[in-house]
Amino acid sequence: MKVELVRVNDAFHFEGTGSSEVKVHTDGSPEIGGVGAGVRPMELLLMGLASCSAIDVVLILKKQKQDITDFRVTADGDRVEEEGTKRSPFRNIHLTYKFVGNDLDEKKIDRAIALSMEKYCSATAQLEALATITHSVEIEAAELKS
Image 1 (tube, rainbow, N blue to C red):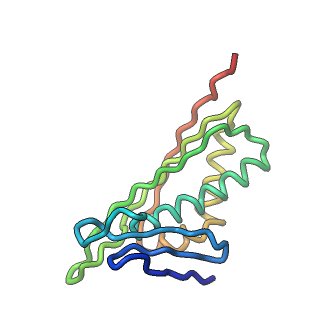
Image 2: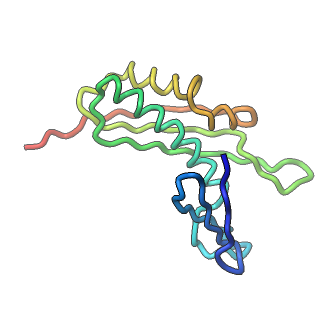
């Protein structure tokens, strides 16, 4: 796997491209001179974890014929500064999976998330060496259309 970053302005705005050639913009915080032209790198790490797991979960639940009408994952990360450095890695990450659908089976959802976290999601495998990763689930029935 290979990605490339290209500096866009004379500050901290970068455009990243991977094998899909889709552009992703990152930027530094305003405190260091960023201008809000992209996500911050640590936010991108959380997005990577959330999207890796979300793709797994949707793939598994589609195979199980679960009728999902809306699905969101929120990732909350707690960072702790390492002594003697300015580095602040994530130490705790909590993922909240929010489902809306028709006749969703909670057991199937729980199993899909467990499979993602324990067997399929490479981002989880990468981050769990340094951070405790937990999750919760919210399920709502879809509103009936009249």
